Length: 413
Image (cartoon, rainbow, N blue to C red; front, side):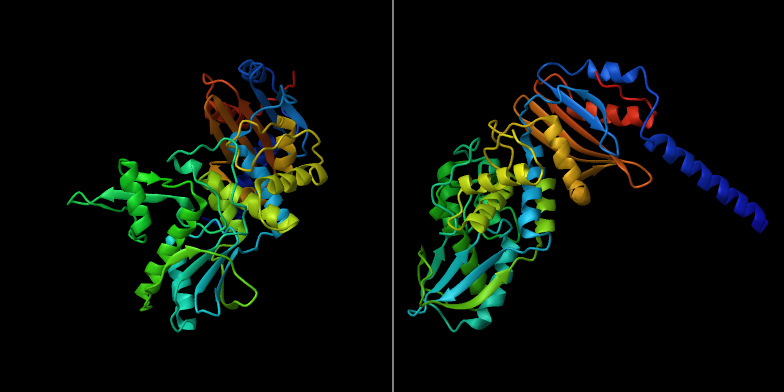
């Protein structure tokens, strides 16, 4: 094939791609039939908003109605965290030796202190120790009486309590081995004595559970994991694991800085819609901005100040940072403002084809918020708040995408 023929084919192909991009992504689209039918699905219990690349409202109904955002609220929490901490911020955990040669752990709310991290910490700190007596856990960076609205004292992992020192999201994952004994279902996680005792008392089927809502027990569980991995390095530990406080005479011997920058923490939090992680971040923000101990009230103040001072939203109601509480209320227009601010970070969201979005689910509540990407780097915004069980939010999300893809103009009511 001659080179000039190849050039013509290349030019024709590029022109076709350009036409598709201009057709799909142009700010005004000719549409008459499908928008009204989509709008008819939205009742007084729901809200829907679609905006173009320049933020122009293309499609709206009940857009000013205050709705329960469910886990789409995590977009706001992520924005506040990025604003105050920066995408490269890393949580830290400190280790001290006191004058009696006790090893003390000072936690600062790292939400990703998983088993692999405790093992790495043990390997990092072991060469700095020449033996120690007791292991003392200082979890005072967070207040001891934190209660998250919408969280109950259940064994559901979504109800895991927050604390300054935690392990594995304050959950344990177990199974029965061939002999019928309770063992860890994760090869990287030992079944510690405390976890084993609590799981036996609960009498649960195999699975992942929150095994305690006692902050002290959550810290002690983390301590047991650390001791296990220290022993694997050859450390000889015969002392007690207990809670306490770092004092002025204690000597800092090691600081662990998280393997995961904040950007990766947020990606995991959003991907798995982890309520524990969202409120860990929020409470840590409260302590960072307003001083320790971290409390839910301080975190909510930080989040409220961000929504008002940076996003200029004046009437958002916030109770916590994960979306688990029905006391959280905002409008589709409010969420649109959050999506515009989150646009540089939209790659942290779940992708489905051209869709990048966060889903939210509570009993009787379905929410979706995100972006429909175009071929030229631009994108549309969409917000869906459904307050009844008979409408499928995912189906509506796809139909909005199809409407845009068919170049139908979305006409506001």
